[in-house]
Image (cartoon, rainbow, N blue to C red; front, side):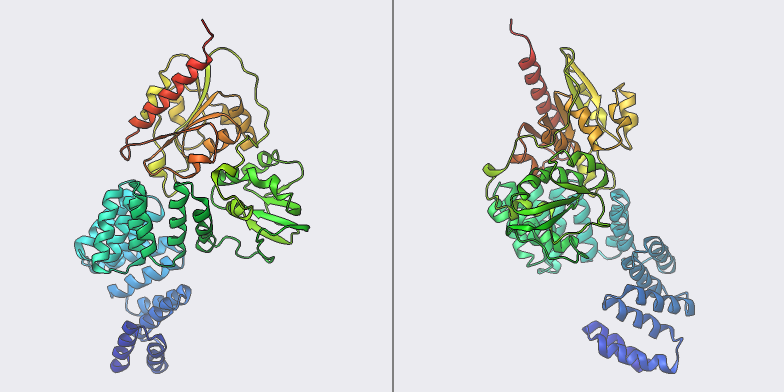
Length: 495
């Protein structure tokens, strides 16, 4: 038995899963409850990409020998890959209770915290992992991920380089180094790093992103198509994907992807699709249904595909590429959302302010702030402010006495009616500035140093107010104040 187990371990380390499995089957035929064989067979299934099977085998091993830390450690990983995070966390803690010197359970707990966007807890666990094993590339890489997500790009780059010293060809380390360079506005270095990462979809997508930051649509848009493979966009759709060829007798389905702001951004192109396809159906997120219906009366807007017949499909963010948009000068910039707003009343500048987005968004740490950090904006005389924030920080608007006209809004159409009645919108990077800019309302976008490409040339009437130092909102506030004062001066009656 022992010879078979030792041979199976050797084969596993060499990556020869078939021979490892053969050895383990011999053991289990003779002794079906052998804990080592069950555990190692679970490891084989995990390596084969079958986490459910791995969990069942490892649970039997743990039941037979509950005091083996390694069993709990690997069961935790199998549960994590099977998307059973709470049980995985419990197994990590059991493993550490049995052997406090282990580093992998801490690393996995760090990953779980990253997934919850709890970056403080993530760094605590990853720090413990590195204390146990200072040269562990997985923990070092995960620290770099946290640093990039929290805007500490210089530190993210340092940790990525540590990984690359240990594993020079590590593709994810090159990707994280590229993200760190992009965050520090070193685009040439970012591109070089993404190219070193190889042909991974994530590398191609981020390389395309850097070209879009330079308004180079010819190089950027095709590379960004890698997001479809990365995110599984279109998976499960039975019809062929549209390649942009005119199809006057066909029904084209456009499916939403990623965020609400992206749907608003690209909805400008929906009318142009009527020149290529016989009929156009757009699948949008439910809060956008009534709003997107204002783009064109000839386009059908749906929020699910039940009963929808179509011949071809395409992804929303692919529309510029499919329509042959080769430069930002070809982008349609006239307002394309047709929503009536209230009549102008009074002489004060009417402005809306949004300071935070959904906290479950991976990069919300760097894009959102608190109303207190924007206090100077509220102190400008001659401005009638209201809150455009909906969500977990509404109490901050109450504390500052800001009206909250969106409290009664049922969807983005109601939100648009409020925004259309404003002279200016000041917002962090959420769906709100996409909405206000698409409505033709003057907009200031408050951003981290790692500003998104969407605000550069894709909207008219947008001023980017970016941080000079990550986490410091002084620069964005100062730039927004300049815009507000300019708007007040332009609105003042001539002497």
